[in-house]
Length: 433
Image (cartoon, rainbow, N blue to C red; front, side):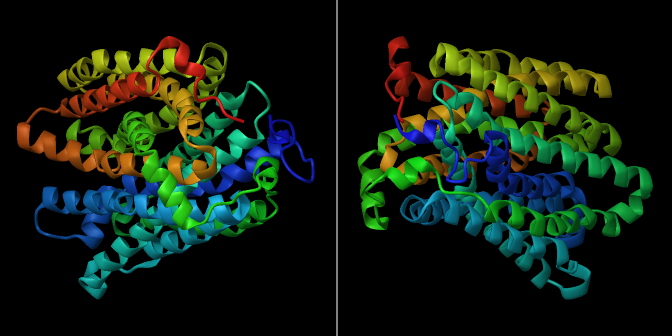
């Protein structure tokens, strides 16, 4: 067992401080993604005016999803950089790239001012965010797994997703305040930019935090730091594991973006609830996720990853669509809250075990690149969840169609879990230092 299991950094600082430093950039990445999802309607009118409300919204949501298409490229390039040069250097680099992408989306004038250049620049900003995000989750998860105390990897890794929930809550609370302070026409005209600008103002603070991050003892103790060619060769040789990891992550990404980024749009455009109601529900989702993630991670440390993963994929398959049907039958704030909290419970408990499982199944020498590639391939599907759901509802007339999307994603997670953990006893087969 590496000394990394007991010592978080060369400076010997507390575990709490180390976890806070490493997840800080993950917060910014998810904050940017959430803000875009929350204000997709306003962004559609600003950058993608077409005279057709549905077409404009689909264009905005497609650009949201486009950021996920470059994630696999970021996973390979930046993941290889981290596996070769170190966790600390890579995490600082990804934060810088994210900051540039955020500024691009926040500051670009609307279509009415600069024409077609506006949506092009917004797309470029989203692609840059997606490229950096391709390895951010993997880099953070691997770092946490390498500083975790013995027998607590699940609990530690859960805080990667935990920081995302803080971003969900923070972004939604800003939305609640803005909706209280600004009338709807001002929110649509310029108010939606405020959360993006707040994200830009947070960047210098996050840089200060992450610059003081120390390299993990486990990485420093490793004698071989493979170059890009070696990393690619190892990942090709282990493609079944990468593919299986992708299957597990699809369940996570589809459910996460459905209950967070898509909730304000679904509640407002489909259920015809107020923006304030949907943002309040989103705050509650973030709080709920933040509770269940570490609890499930700790539970998986005790009973193994496999039982937790199987239980919550099966529950999702059985209940997701009926829950959405019940909601759309009589839409209300209370019903939306109940359904979303149930889906939050399913997501939080599954993901609490999934993240640490993904760090364990990957070969140690390409742990960051392998994790990031599997995760990024899955998000190329999961990131389009808002767009796919909107298209399905429009084409079928079935407002509960997003429940079917979530059910299919859960089937992917179930199959992947059964393949990677072929027998109950195999839950320990991937345990690594």
